[in-house]
Amino acid sequence: MSAHVNLSAEERAELFGGFDPDEHAAEAERRWGGTQAWTDSARRTASYTKEDWQRFLADAAGISARMAEAMRAGLPADGGQAMDLAEEHRAHITRWCYECTYEIHRGLGEMYVTDPRFTASIDATAAGLAEYFRSAIIANAVRHQG
Image 1 (cartoon, rainbow, N blue to C red):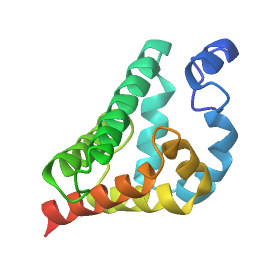
Image 2 (image 1 turned 45 degrees about the vertical axis):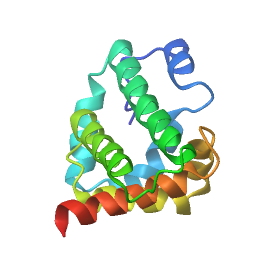
Image 3 (image 1 turned 90 degrees about the horizontal axis):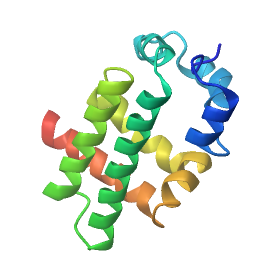
Image 4 (image 1 turned 180 degrees about the horizontal axis):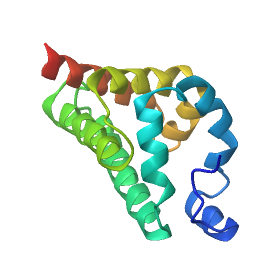
């Protein structure tokens, strides 16, 4: 099942470069296909236009860039600014994809450092960003859940 039915091949290339999200759809469906998050994400993203994807990607890139700035500035991953960015990241996922609980967000943070594909993609913004992001996500979850 294609999650990007409203996009032409040219639009996909323009938006995602060499990464084709549909290439990984089968793996993602095997892992999360029966979950509410998967169902919600598939329903929401199926109707996204090119402009929606541009906004989604720009918002995500902005969060990553600001997280990288915090890391380069030497701010602690468990400090207020990094945790606020982690919370913004969680809210971004909830707004665009599915209800991203703190538990799910922690799982994403773990995947960022345990799946080399995610690590490479995130660390392309700044070396070590995936680990910093995970630490900020964990600290943020602790802050909100106790």
